[in-house]
Image (cartoon, rainbow, N blue to C red; front, side, top):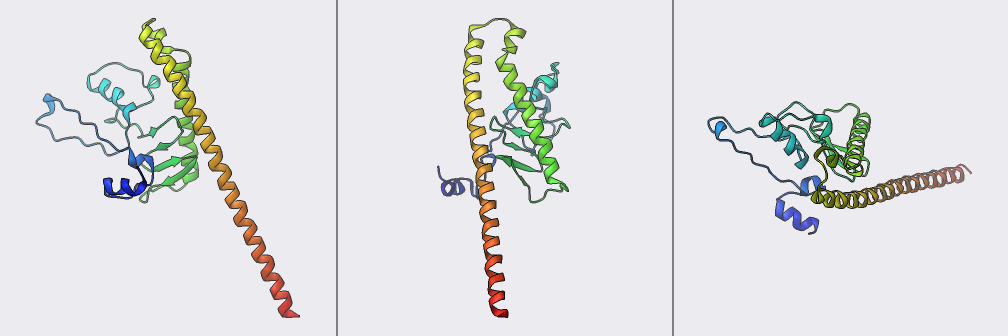
Length: 202
């Protein structure tokens, strides 16, 4: 579906897949019927569902072993995908290019983006390690169904990683080429201007 059709569907311009893929998760509990609804407006993803449910049901879990967060906690909001794209409350990054939100209060966007680039890379490397070493087989024992899912995820993960590396490299090369082209045009314009001034003086 093209950008124009998406804009008609959403009622607004869609500038990134973060906006395109917006969805909602509704959780209900009879014990909270008399309470006001809790609405989480920070960026969240499917990775946050398990940690959130674990805390709601008082299930012990190690936050180091899951890449998501409990959305009702004070943990920093972070959404990311295998292509190393990410989004926080301050903005989003695609192809290693960070775009702050219009209402962002950041004073050093470059340092902020570098920090989250590192966090996302570490989380993805961890997730890839879990798959590569079949960590859950170690935890839960051998299971044919687990092995099938494991092998499938390895193939998908590698394909997404290779595609992301290729796209990011191309984006960086295109950006460098555009900057060089602009610099060259600027130099040519300055040279022409100086030559014209020299002729005028004669």
